[in-house]
Image 1 (cartoon, one colour):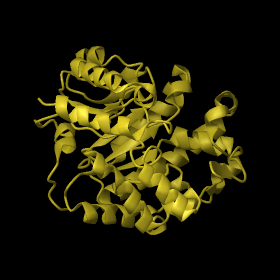
Image 2 (image 1 turned 30 degrees about the vertical axis):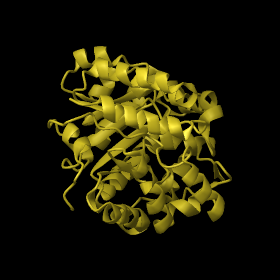
Image 3 (image 1 turned 180 degrees about the vertical axis):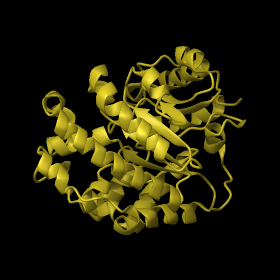
Image 4 (image 1 turned 45 degrees about the horizontal axis):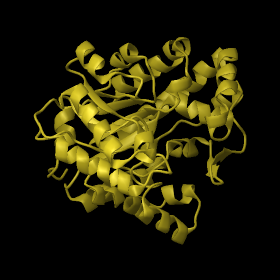
Length: 343
């Protein structure tokens, strides 16, 4: 692998000194970037076609380079590894599954994933991004957590308006839920290790619905998947656990992830006192970038740095960029972070 010119992110993940806090953003490629919007409009194809188009995925992944971020994350969807298993989502424009997965027989019919042969385009995208970067920045891979994928599969579409129904179904069907999560955990390990072997410098696991999952269900179903995944990944590649606005810090600390990406519900100063050697990522509120002034953004960055003392910290948001976020606010966030993040 080409030596990195900017290795701040990896240095922090490996507890090595840096000159300033590294910064990247979830959903930094797309949504808020006018160049991405123009590309989508000109191309005209549904998202699943873009995700499988190596050249376009590489181009979109690299768009945030102009912001001055310290890492690139692959442009892809968390549903990508489901397609070879027979669970095929199409985007119209949001994800739609013709038959939601709600029976044990459907779980048994999910085919085992062999990423190396069935998801070659993902490997090609990772290799292509690294070739274009030529060591300029590290590349992050990622996967949706087993429970996040399960939410989509049970809903048969975006789960955002169906949380109560999905959680009720999970509680009422423990045998189904356990079987589905076991199948998806195996898939996730294979997929993330393939990304690492293809050239991802680090990987992030997205627990995207952690904010609506009770502690009881988190302990019963979510935590075991995290521990299994992080213990099964290539130890030479750092891993990050993202849990959307989850207060379950003690469980997150037991996950085995190298770094924890936390929401606003976590007091970073208190978290650092509890676990001073743990690397924390986050946790500026994405709504501040969407709706706040530049002064509000600067204050939020300063507050975040004050809470972590700029040690063992990767600056990011509490969640992904919101679609309504002005692009100039994103640029301001990065600029302020670089100006004030010196150690």
